[in-house]
Image (cartoon, rainbow, N blue to C red):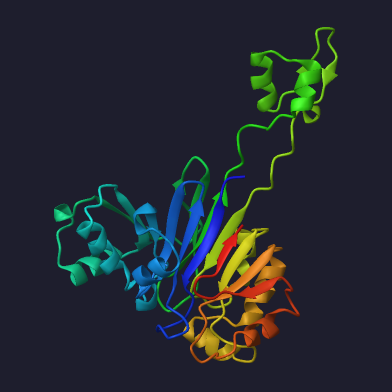
Length: 305
């Protein structure tokens, strides 16, 4: 299996505190590194948790609230300071590029590297990136301004791994081995058909990670995130605060658990923790009776999917 690892750099809501930075995470999938959101202080958090900023080639911004993108101007300048050469692709809502220009007062052409901006403006799930080992799509959320969630999915490997013991018994030639790796059956010289599973190991289950940034409870997302391996869902409010959460465009921990259960996800991570919640265990207690496999993330939390 290729590496598929998520590291949370900032897990708090609204403002950085001594316990939590604001929203940012990095996904390693094989040799690529993706960043989702880049709140204030993200560069410091990268140094704290061993993430090399130069490895990141794709950045996805969920929406234009400061706790999700105010760290981006500084990161872009740092890349220039260290003479980055690799192009950088940034995906985000309309006005992201204009907002960065207003803050940075720089013509992109003077930077040591090229930035490619990809505007997200959609009312339905939309494919954003299609690479050899993975793909990334986005989908609209329900917040006070245009906001998007992201789904990162591993692609099924094109070839099967073959069992040495079967190869030693049947001794197929090179062209037949290629055929077996593609999933074809083996046909003996006398016409007997040996099923491919005799020669190959089952492929590993496809892994996926869904990130729901700031959003009110959206049960209709079930069809988008059905069966994902890991769901990270915001949990800014506690059970009993549903009305307040809805008015602010946020969710409770219980609502996150309800969506996870309805969507048959394997694991639920609760993030975007309010500074008012002093004991994260409270969030677990709110959610675990509905969805048992629940964890509250913290800065530096890392998970191999």
